[in-house]
Each structure stands twice: as structure tokens, then as C-alpha cells.
Amino acid sequence: MNGIKALTFDVFGTVVDWRSSIARELRTFFEPRSLSRDWFAFINDWRDLYQPAMEDVRSQRRPFVILDVLHRENLIKLLEKYDIQGLSEDDILELNTCWHHLKPWPDSVDGLLELRKSFTLATLSNGNIALMTNLARYSALPWDVILGAEFAQAYKPDARAYLRTASALGLEPCQCMMVAAHNVDLRAARKLGFRTAYVNRPTEYGPDQVTDLGPEENWDITCSSLIELAKLLR
Image (cartoon, rainbow, N blue to C red; front, side, top):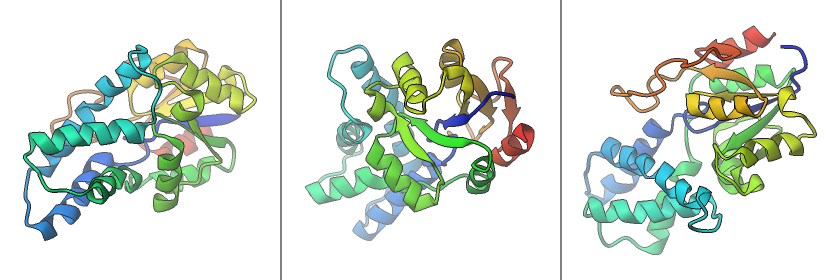
């Protein structure tokens, strides 16, 4: 892998376990209020609204807004769907910032620390800068720089998200390796000249996951953890 200077990372699902983390946060918030729902169904529904909300931005049906705004709008829809009433604005803000408190996969921090010895590590996530910063502090994720959607003013897989991230690092796309657990993310990056590393996370969506159960193309690297990725790159 000669010539690679930086690794750019998808974060949700690749580095952190959003599903279990959000379900835990929802239980912690609602159980003292004696409110019970299927929180895994709730978080799956929240995530299902993610791509359609970003597509409104990609298609220019609305101006760029950060992911925190889209998450909040989708949360309001879900509170109505699940018949959850009487929350204050502060309550809604607290729930929305669940996305700032996601636990890393067991291999993530050690793998990133090892990778950082040889490469610049940058986020290339659809998460906004404040979200990524708070998440890094919460889970001790050792990024060198936070880039991606808000910096580029474009959501993946829009080419601008990848190209503006590489440019900000002072690098050509071929000097960057996109690291992701999602084939569509890697496919978009490869078309632009990025090298690619697929990290298999077959339980990201829980036991009934039906997508991204394995590599769909011959990516430059396929691995099952960031620790393995560090070994392969070394």
C-alpha cells in the first residue's frame, strides 16, 4: 500500500456501535419516566429515516443542514409514531444528543491508536463537526482531524464529501484510503481514486442485518477489525 498518507473513516457503524448505544441511551432516559417501548425498533426506525433526510439535501430540495438538525427532525416524527408525548425542548435536545454518546466497537480505539503511528487519521463521516468532536471525546477516538460532510457541505456519497476531505489534507485521492463497513461508501470513494478498506461489521443493524454482510467487490483490503487493518497495513 505504498503512497497512502491518510486513512479517512466512516464512523457510524464502522468505528462505533450506534444501534446498541442509542438503545441504551433511550432506556436510560425513558425508564425513570415509566415509559417502555421497543427501543431497538425505535432506533432502527430513526436510522431508516437517515438516508431519505440526507437525500433531500443531496438533491438540493433543501439547503445543506447539519446532521444534528436532520436527526432532530426525524426524532420528532418518531415521538409521534411511538405515541411519546409531553417532552420539553430540553428533553428533545437530550435525546437528540444520544448520537454524541456512542460506544466504540471493542477493537476500534486500539486499532486507531496503532494506525495513527503510521497514518493521518481523519473522519469522513456524515456527522457534523460538533457531533464528531463530542463523540471523539466520549469514546477516546484519536482522530488527527475531523472533516467530512459539514466541512464539505455535502453528504456522502456526493463526490464533494470525499474530494474536499482529501484536498483539506493536502493530498490526492490516491494518497487516501477510505475505511468503511459499507460497500456503497467504498464504491463512491473508489470511483474518485481513493484506496479502499472494508471492515466487516455484520451485526451493525442487529441479528437480522441483511446488507453489508461482507465485501461486494474486490476492495484493496478486507478485514474484520481495525486491529487487523493495522496489521495488514503494517
